[in-house]
Amino acid sequence: AVKNYKDIITAADGIMIARGDLGVEVEIEELPIIQRRIIKECAIQGKPVIVATHLLESMIQYPSPTRAEVTDVANAIFEESDVIMLSGETATGKYPIKCVEMLNRIALRVENSGGGVGYSKERIPKNQKEELALSAAGLADSLKASAVIVITRRGTTAINLASFRPKYPIIHAFTNMTSVRRKLLLNRGILPYRLDFSNDPEKTIASAIQIIKKKNMIRSGDKVVILSDIIAGSDRVETIQIREVK
Image 1 (cartoon, rainbow, N blue to C red):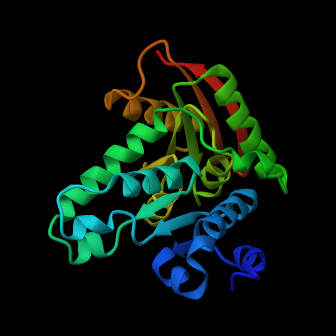
Image 2: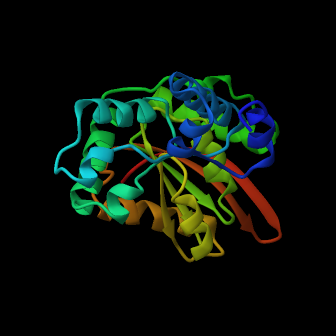
Image 3: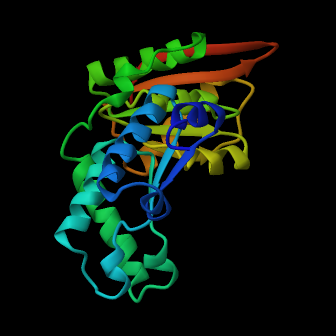
């Protein structure tokens, strides 16, 4: 499987790196190298990647992690993995809530410290939708936008955008399907919402902006980038917009 990891990533919808199982199959010193290669290839192909097991292993028994574990978690975030997943720490450990709180604390601090390794810069758009997503990501970064708002039915537009790893904003993805909202929770940087879409795209966008504003995640005067993939009448409309929040 390790020899064919690129082909496996191509065939898969997403990848989980279960370090406990992987560490049994390879020499222990090879494990971090293989993890990095898999994360990089997932970034290049635009596939979500989960880093799992042995993240905060000592917290199964103790209320605080080791310094090495904190660094391990931080490295997975610097590598821009989509998900960091606990297993035994919360399934059988003595401190499941503290584990989740610690993981969140490390993740927030690392994400707020600056950019990651930038593997996604090697990702090449394969079609017009991905070109549009790359343009939106670049626009959000150059403007230092406070947020990116995505209006999407099936989630593809939001997933494409997230795969190009915009540096600054959270991607607020609005869909009218509950199943799509759940699916989008897997991708890095996406905060998904369910919203009933209006037949008027302007009303849908206005509703999305108001929802985020009420959560105090954007304020009047902020710039936001809007990427929409919605149906207006008999036409599918794909647009990128820059708006100032009123």
